[in-house]
Image (tube, rainbow, N blue to C red; front, top):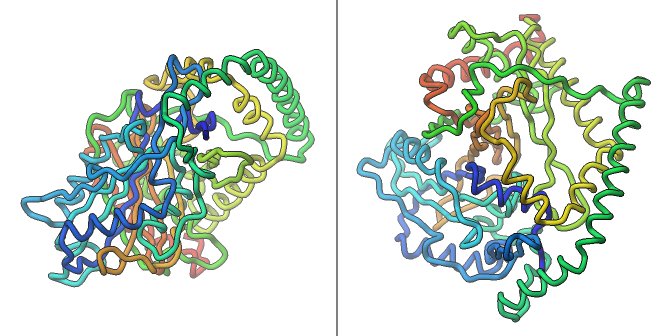
Amino acid sequence: MNSLAPRDATMYWLSARTRNDLFLLYAFADAGESDAALRRVVHTRVAGIPDLLTRVLDTPANIAYPIWVPCEFADTQFVVHSLPDPTWSAVRDALGALLATGVRANERPWRLHVFRDVRDAPGFASGEPALIAVLQLSHALADGRRASALARALFGSGTTDYVLDGAGREKRGEDAVVLTAVANALLRFPIAMARTVIRGLNAERARRELAALTQAGELPPPAPGVPPNLLNGDGSDPSTHAVRMIVCDADRLRTPGHTVTTTALTAISLALQRYLARHDAPADSLRAQVPMAATAPGPERNTYRDLSIDLSADIPSIPDRAAAIAAALASARTRAQHPLQRAQSRATDAIPAPILHRDVTHFPVHALPEQLSGHTVVSSVHRGPADLSFGGGPVRFTAGFPALGAVMHLTHGIHGLGDTITLSLHADPATLPDLDAYAALLEEAVGEVAVALRSGSPD
């Protein structure tokens, strides 16, 4: 039996209140295989990927944490979408509708969406058809890095290193599994409460030690909060979604002395500043929430940590701005990776399921705080070499769309695959009705930043 880790359970319970699924797009050459043949390919590949043959089993009144149990591949997990006019623009519109949906992980935690014979896709020759595959995953099943590994297992020639440690593949019936989990949770409840108190005290002690190290200058300070701006909406979940993608040759974002993430963040900083200025909105203080890949002991499947990064909009020189962003990333990573930071996670890990479920279901997710950690999310993941294929067609590029929420109405994805990097935009049209204008600003900024960083010029 394999229960969801507390953080993964949090993602699962949150999915009932807000959309938080992961969407991974892969563009393949369409080799003309039939839909039925593609379904057979998926069915065959999934048979060797334990993570994709599992679902969530709830326990009564959430007395115990939900449980991963094995299941079979269902035909409903492979969906071919028929578009009246299968153009790239039509696929983008269809993606906007898909991003407003969520899988039910207690039925199946993933689904593969396929668009056939797509014309005018980026990176394809005129008249060359594309096959667009979009893997939709419950966030309880995977974070960004794990999701990329699962997609590689599905479309590659190997299997994933990320498996559910057997996924509870025992032969007992689900009723027996639930009864065992509930009985264990009830027996351990007093111990869990005591452990929660002890670890809570340890977390408070760690907080004081972190403060002392910060005061002594031995650790970078925590990121300050910033007030929301135009990009954060009004505290309500978006009712509609829109996406745009800028598919680049990777060399456009590879600059001397900087990572792709830093170069992209610098371009995003410039584009956001100019976009906000067009709308007479404050743009002198911009921050981005940047997920950082991390490792954690145990079965936790969402191991990333969010960093709040100053986009240095007050620095006019592009090279100086990029240097400041790189320094902010390094400082935030140093603080996030300090061993004392683990104390808070350990306290959460000990919380009994009913208490954490109550906290998750009562947390005010639809309120706009006075202070935020960022005005946008920027998720950066390199998805490996471009050696994937589907139905005989090689892959050309990949993209991803970090979820929107009550306080994030514009998010960015930076996803590399082989020699391409895609900058993806996911927005609430009610907040950003002119997403094409922002996309144009970002594409212009990418070129401007690349030139400035390669030449070392001050502007």
